Amino acid sequence: MTEIMPEGAVEFWDEATRMYYERQEDGELTSRPFNEAENRKADEATNYAYLQGKVVGLSAAVAADIPVNGAFLALAEGSEAYRDQVDELTAQSTRQAQMLCALARMALPALEDVKMSIPEL
Image (cartoon, rainbow, N blue to C red; front, top):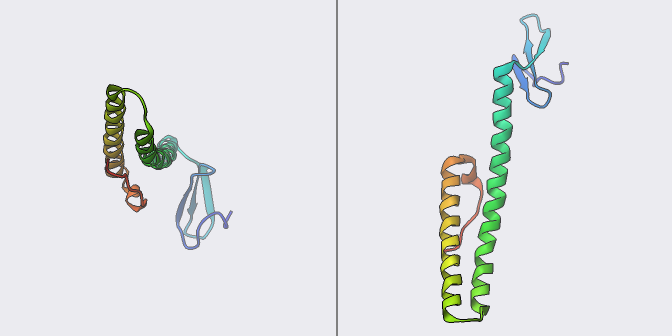
């Protein structure tokens, strides 16, 4: 059991196994399953990591959509009203993507490290 706990640590919460480890004064390790609060905290951390990954992935996809929409606008055929509507929908989509990326960066501080830019329309 000693290899589970980091060197010199007195306490250790292993989220992978949902076990809590504690080093006693005599050096012996004791362990127990996570309690309800610790399980809730581990679940929240797992959910946060999942959402963070999802936001990063979707933000990258949205950023990639913008030039595709621009290329479509350059090729779009049809009536002027059709082209105007596609142009407006593309602008709306771009504004929404920029807003959501900004909100995600505010809500998920870890995204500060993600180098991602949303092109301006």
